[in-house]
Length: 136
Image (cartoon, rainbow, N blue to C red; front, side, top):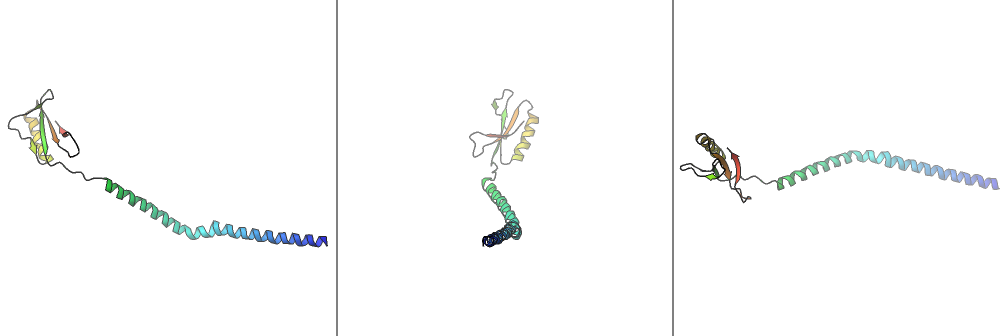
């Protein structure tokens, strides 16, 4: 009788062991192969969407932070002598509305007065001092 109970115990362990191994194999295949295969396509799309969202957020943040550059409304030509002291020449136009016109006049002044130096400056809103754009 003892040998019969051993056989039934061994058979029970074999059945339980086989069931556990089969269930483990099923779970391993389910989570290791089947579910990732089903969701992989969607996960790739979600990943691409997250990257696009990050790019969009970065672009919006950059546009909000970047301020449009306001061009100055007035440009001035300053004259300096050989010692670097500011000097005034009578009859010389020194105030302009556009950068190009001021630069053109400044180049002509340099030809006419080669011993003087000229600076194209403007008063920017965020600056306490005049800002030099060009210097001849």
